Structures are given as structure tokens and as C-alpha cells.
Image (cartoon, rainbow, N blue to C red; front, side, top):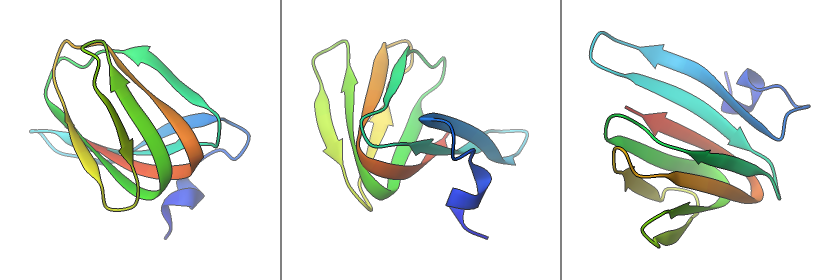
Length: 95
């Protein structure tokens, strides 16, 4: 199975639960080129891992980091953040 097969190709941004446990979960995400995953917060620390493509992750504290294949970033709880697709991208969000 491939991560792309999990997503609706008609959506610019799509997320689908991939794996859940009693302690956390993994979500497969797709952000298309030019699409914006709008501002939001998480209540727990998270890890965003870029599998393919390229995205820019930004937060309200002024952080701006470009993620390419194999890159990851730790997301702080209760900090507003968002991501923009530079290229069609597949990501994993681990909480």
C-alpha cells in the first residue's frame, strides 16, 4: 500500500488516520502544491515528518522551516501553526 492511495485526489489538503493506539496515533497527510493547511493548534506535542514533496511549516512564534523528504519538525502544543505545500507532499503526523 502507498500513502497516496489513502487520500482523496480532489482535495488540496487531506488527512486520514493511519494507526491508533491507546497512547497516540499516526495520521497520513497530503498537501498539494500551493495548498495551505490552515492555522490550528494541537493540545499535545507532535512530530511532523515529510515523506515526499516539500512543505513550509510556520508558527505564530516566527518559526519558518522548509521540510523535504526525510525532514521532520517537533510541533509545540498550544502554538498556532500552519503549512503550505511547495510541491505535492505526503507527510506523517505523529502524536
